[in-house]
Length: 408
Ligand SMILES: *Cc1c(COP(=O)(O)O)cnc(C)c1O
Image (cartoon, rainbow, N blue to C red; front, top):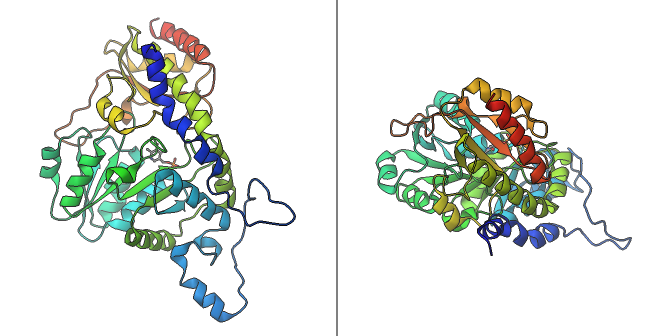
């Protein structure tokens, strides 16, 4: 096997392996003598009618079992999606919420309390940082930041008696540091805190609960929904007590997702393995091509040794997704990078990722570092690529033209 074949296999293996699960999970529809549909239709509803008051009261006590109580607590299609995500994440319970950001904020609100302290990695998704620095601060919760590649002693030194949550995101937004999640889990637990992981990049290829994570977050907006037409999130837990706290918080915040978004996400999930088996390979081809170009200082793709924490990706992940970062050499200006990006014809310019199509986003200004121990890791202009289902040779030709524009 050539090196490239071995790498192709390493990035796509986990996606191929989950194909059977994705096709068969959460399809236990009630048998119907008329015949059973392959897919459950979206279920709409607010009021749920009960035969008697006693039946209604008894059902209200079963809020932790995903019973049909009232539409705001979730409809059958939402509960079906919750079962699907729990199976993929290896969780006991999953709560669907209105967006990936709502998953982050609901998880933080559910497990932080008065005078609490939260540790966030400096590579955390920007809106999560903003939530902690504004709303959590307003309610008296302190946040401090740690370098995502910190070692155990460094992290221990940042723990405080009131640390309630250690947050991780692996790989990190924009800079793609892969974190040692099991080590972070041990230190969080020794200090009496919970570990919350934003596992959006690693859905299905990183198994959070096998690495000591307590609460795992998904922006289902990305690969599960997969077609850039839905905003939805999920929070998963392995522990029954944590589930009660999470479920109560979600209900009190009025968190749910509409039936169409749940249905679109279930539909997207069925092909996620096949899409990503291809997209992960396409992304690797593009990343390897860029890594050889003289304009590029660094390709931040977890499957390449140039990415911080690459050895942890090799240890812990069964594949790679199709989102990675690129840093240009220092001599290029931000404005020449923007001209390059504007010249691309096959890459959409826009936020988010996870659909079937390729995207590009300038990220230089989004790389923020609060920790004193952690300087911005690179100085050149930066952008992020999401690689879709196009022919990778066409994407490479487009990028090649873009680099010509950069050099003009
Ligand atoms: C996109 C994203 C989110 C937020 O998801 P939305 O559904 O867009 O709110 C959270 N975390 C990570 C890592 C993301 O990439």
